[in-house]
Amino acid sequence: MKRIAIFASGTGSNAKKIVEHFAENDNIEVSLIVSNKSKAGVLNLAKTHNIPYLILNRQDFYHTENILEEFTVYPIDFIVLAGFLWLIPEYLVKAFSKRMVNIHPALLPAYGGKGMYGHHVHQAVWEAKEKVSGMTIHYVSEHYDEGNIIFQAECQLASTDSPEEIAKKVLQLEHQHYARIIEELLLKKQQP
Ligand code: GRF
Image 1 (cartoon, rainbow, N blue to C red):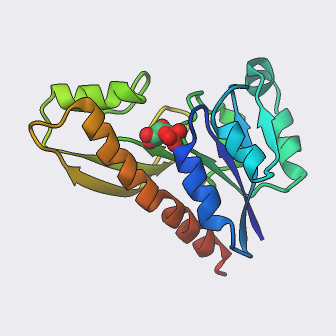
Image 2 (image 1 turned 135 degrees about the vertical axis):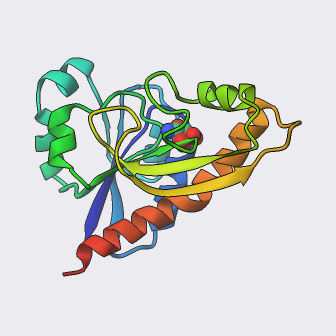
């Protein structure tokens, strides 16, 4: 059994897709949901599906390695960031090297980095009059949006698309691919 922890700060629509994708899977399970916000929408998902959840404390997260101990309870094999806004500290990146992925709502390396999240990304894409946008799934490093790219998918943009419409197209792509790519990565890791 491979056990996933999903980290999310917001609504958790990607987290929901992932939880639903693995709900009937005997080999892969979402075992923990982690958030930095006690009121994040994603916690309702945890409650609905009876998934244990953890609310992070900034001090603990950055100045202790307690979370690694917490993970041994399940034990967690793989971390999925799905709209998690805090930078991942080095000790966690190291402990989960090649076992932690993030999804970004643009075609990295364009429109990534600090401050490039949520509507800021789509606004920038819109201002640049891009004809194409998309999403990127990548490994997590100590820097925002810089780990090796695993998978990208594109969508065409119309000149009439508003930033909100761009966001919708991109989110649809995320929902379509994220769980599938996670599954592929986990299955690959099980091979000898
Ligand atoms: C997604 O657009 C993802 O790419 C970004 O944060 C957003 C999370 O949305 N990292 P949701 O909470 O999964 O709806």
